[in-house]
Image (cartoon, rainbow, N blue to C red):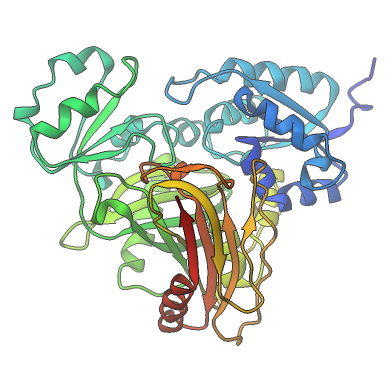
Length: 436
């Protein structure tokens, strides 16, 4: 039996397995420090994860152990026992030097483990509140839209005629826009309510119709190391869903100062200590930022590749440094970068092609492992960096109701926002999505 001094040094990554492997820089950074890499992920990823790990190449080959835990996204704290059990087992065999939640699913139990092990983490309040939309409304009322919290026991007594419209229905514990819909009148409420599981807590919020943004902040010892605003477009301008269609990093906007100020006040209220946050905002007609939600983990979609395109440097190494208690720093953007998801027709995906020199579609496949996107030089002209297809040929493409329904995405960057808008239009016209 090993003694405490003999235990190998290790680091725990938690979240969806494909999200962890999508950002291989985490794995590479940890491997370079000779840390054993331990992964906790929901059991639903086990089949795909084991198939990927069976290969001898790729980032997954750097992972030493994987623990699969049971739970459900729409049931609060359901993953906590499994995460605690896995962490307790590993503590007996390893010296755990850090833990980080790459994805949304396991943010709360990761915070509990970090607190128990005395490791750098967001803080108990932040880890708990950032995982619960109704707790965010309770703690962050000054920055939130008007809201009614509907526990499962009160859903049957809800009177749609007594509500003020337009409004937004949100499940309190999910992510990726799952279950979030707009309602323009009482007739829209009943069919939506019937689709939510009986045990799920709901939020009924005043709909904020202004443009959407996010703020990414890297914090260490309670002080911001880096903060930046991302501009977004979403499907709610022409749909009842709220699926994100584009993200733009590095642009100077008139709302940036107000968004950064409001975000700083939110982090102070949460007592945020160490890690990265991804907060989502919309603007009221008078320009006041209203918090949609805040997450205590890596920003999703392609925001990490976008930050690398905009600054020339990867953000993941600094996130790892923060989780290990090492000094962190990150530069400001030198370029503007954008990720664009295409709205596709409904049907069976036959093919995706593009008429663009030097660029071809990359079919990601079931493993959903993204190739690394290399940045250009600061003074380089507008460029298309990558085109990814997330669905396999023969897949059924459905209407966009959550982020998981998106199929085709491309990445571009440019010296200015005007040049970025121009290349986006040209790339869109060059892509062909064939659906039968």
